[in-house]
Structures are given as C-alpha cells and as structure tokens.
Image (cartoon, rainbow, N blue to C red; front, side, top):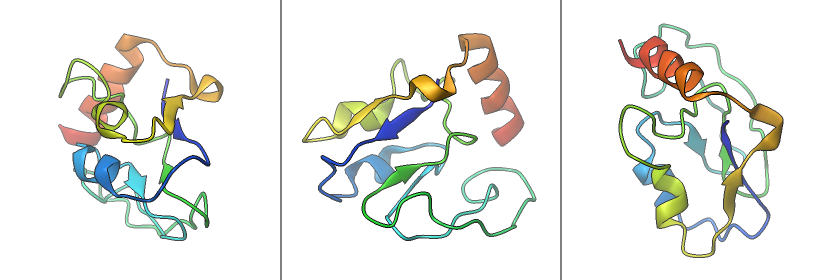
Length: 103
C-alpha cells in the first residue's frame, strides 16, 4: 500500500528528503518514473496535487528494502501522511516494486 499526504501538510519538505524512491514531490511539480530510480522512463507527468506535497503511488514502496517503516511517516511533524487504502499492496508486491525501481 502506498502512502498518501493529506491536506494537513505544511510543505516542510521533510518527507521528500527521506524518500529513497523519490516518490514525493512538491505541490505543482511534474514528475517522472526515472527520478531517483534505475528506470529509463523520463516521460513527464503532471502534478498529482497543486496545493501540497504528494506521493506517486507507482514509486512508493513504503520503504520496503530500505527501512523497517515508511520514513516519511516518521519524519512528518504534523502527521499528514497516512497509508493509502486506494493502493493496497502486500509486502511481496512492495519488495517486487522496489526491485523493479532499483535493480
């Protein structure tokens, strides 16, 4: 399951700095799958949110393979990051995603 940033976000950037997948972007920022991964997909995508930081679900692995828990949740000073029920994945699926992004 990916994480999601809610509208309590204060845009402090702490979460983005901790994300090993470069899956977190500032509001209004375009993103690519290649950012911070070994993928060659440089196609630019529009921001998921214009108002506050957002997570790209296809890049979020909940830090599987990097940390014991999602680093972004740990560092968020206002608890604005939750698990996203719209993107449920097993530990095996998250590990496979991590391998696809970084191996």
